[in-house]
Image 1 (spheres, rainbow over the protein chains, first blue to last red):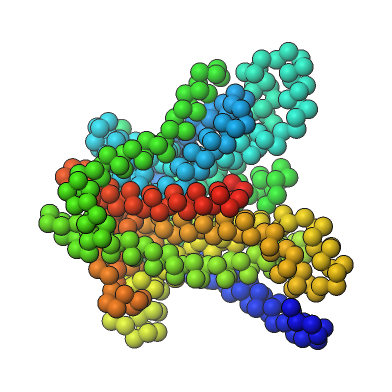
Image 2 (image 1 turned 180 degrees about the vertical axis):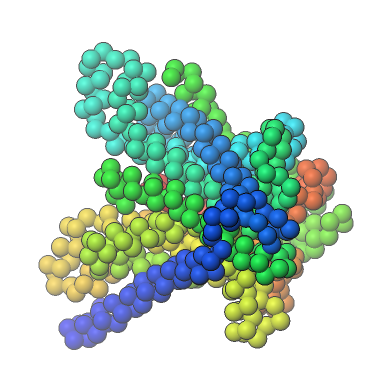
Amino acid sequence: MMTSVRGRGLVGRFWFLLTMLTTVLSVMLLVSVVSVMVAKGGAVLTWEFFSQPSRSFGAEGGIRSQIMGTLILAVGAGLISLPIALGTALYQSEYLSLRFQSVVMRLIYALNGVPTILFGLFGYLVFGLYFGLGISWLSGVLILAMMILPTLVVSIREAIESIPVQYREAGLALGMTIPQLIRTVIIPYSFHGIVTGLLLGLARATGETAAILFTATTFFGVDLPKSFNEPVTTLQTHILVLSQEAVHLSATSAVWGSALTLMVLVFCFSSGALVIRSRFGVKV
Amino acid sequence: MTPWFLGISFLISSSLAGIILVFLISGSLPIFEKYGWEFIFGEEWYVGETYGALPMIYGTTVVTGIALGIALPLGIGTAVVTSEVVGRRMRYILKSVMEIMAGVPGIVYGLLGMLLVTTWIRDLFGLVDGNCLLTAGLLLGVMILPTVMTLSEDAIHVVPNFYREQAYALGLQTHEVIIYAVLPQAIPGILGAIFLGTTRAMGETVAVMLVIGSLDRIPDPFYNLFAPAQSIASKIGREAAESIGVGLHWNALVALGLILFGMVMTLTWLAERVGWTGRLQ
C-alpha cells in the first residue's frame, strides 16, 4: 500500500475512473443491443405483421403462427412445470430434514446447469422416439418443462423460506396437519414466489432455441397444431432459419421484427417477475 | 393436494439430472467402446468414418475464455460501482437493467452477430470472413455480462457495513476500503458468479452456432482467434437433426454432450464449493 496520502489519492482517482469506465462500457453495450434491435426491427412492427401468417419464405405476411407457437410451447411448459415444482418445493420444506434438503437442492442446481442443447438431445430420443411423439409441440413442451423446473423450484423455495416461523407455529399450535398448513399458510404466503418463478420460467422457455430446434419446431407450413404430434413453428426457429437463408431484403427486416418481438415477449415476463419480487421486499 | 402428489413431483425433479446423466453415458458407450480415448483426443470428425472431439472441446474452451475476458472486468467493475459508488436509486436502476438484460435470448445475440458483428469484425481486421472464434466469444461475453454483474453485485452488497466502517475508521480511502475490506469478503460470491457465467457461456448453442464458422478443426496456429472453428454445443445443434437418434453418429453427438455435461458440472460443483448463494439469476 502506498504511504503518501497524495499518492493514495491518485491511485484512488485512477481506480475510480477505471471502474466507472467499465460501468459506462457495460451499460453502453447493453443499451446498444436493445437500441439496435429497436432500430432494425421497430419499423416492421405493424398490426398486419402480428396478425398475418408468414408467406413466401418470410418475405411477405407476418408472424402470427410464430408468436402462437412460441407461446404454446412456453405456456405449456409452464403449466406442466408449475405443479411439479410446487410439489417439489413443498415436499422438501415440509417433509425433509435440513441435511437432505441441501442434497436435493444440489440435484436441482445440477439440473439447472445442464446446457439446454442436452435437453434437446435427451428429449429427441426419449419423448420423440421412445414415447413416439416425434417432432411435435408436445415433445417441446415436455422438454422445456424439464428445463425451467429448477427456476421455478428455487423461486418457490425462496418464498417458502421467507415465511416467518411464527406463522408456521401458529398453524401447528392450532392442531393443523401438514397438508392443512400447506393449504392455509404456506401457499398463500409464498404465492408471490410461485408467480415470480412461473414468470421467470416462462421468460426462459420463451427465449429458448436450442432445446426445441430439432425436437418440436419446423420452419414451414403449420399454423396451429391440430393434434399432439404435430410440430409448431416458433419465432426462434423463424429467426434462426431466416437469418441464415433469407435472400429478400423484406425477409431480413422481418427477421429483425421477429427478434424484437421475441425480446419484448421475454422482457414482459421477466420484468413482471422483477416487479413482483421487489414489491414483496425480496432484494433486487 | 395430498402428500403422495408432493412425493411424486419431488421424485421427478430430484431424479431428472441423474436420468440425463444416465442417458448421456449409455448413449455414448458405443463410441467410447470403439474409439476409447481416441474420441476425446482425435482431431478428425467425418461422419461415417471417424469421430474426434478435440476441435470442439478446443472451440468451447476458447470461446468461453474470450467471453470471460470481456465479462469479468466489465461485470465485476460495474458490480463494484453499482454496490459501492452510486446511490440507492441508481443502484436500483442498474440492477433492474441487468436483471432484465440477463434474459435476452441467445438467438437475439446470434442474429446480431450474424447480420452485424461478423461484418464489423471482418472489416475491422481485414478478414475474408467474420465468422470466427473471436466473434463468437465477443457475443457470448456481452451475453453473460449481466449475469456476472448482477450475481457479483449481490455478493459485494451483502458484505456487512461493519467492515466498511472499520476500514474507514482506520483511515482508509474509499478505494482502499473496497479493495482491502469489502472485496476479500465478497470473493466467494464473485467466484460463484464467475463459474455460473462460465457455464452459461459453455452451454450456449445458437449464439455461437451462427457466428463461429462451423469448421471442425483446431485453427493453425492454435491461438489464431480469427479462424472459424466449432464448439460442442454448436456441433450438436448443427448435426442432431441429421443423425436421427441411431447409429454411431448419434452416439458421437451424445458423447460430445457428455463431455460438455462433465465440464459444466465441474464448474457448478466448484461454484457450490466456493460458497455460491444459490441464486439462479
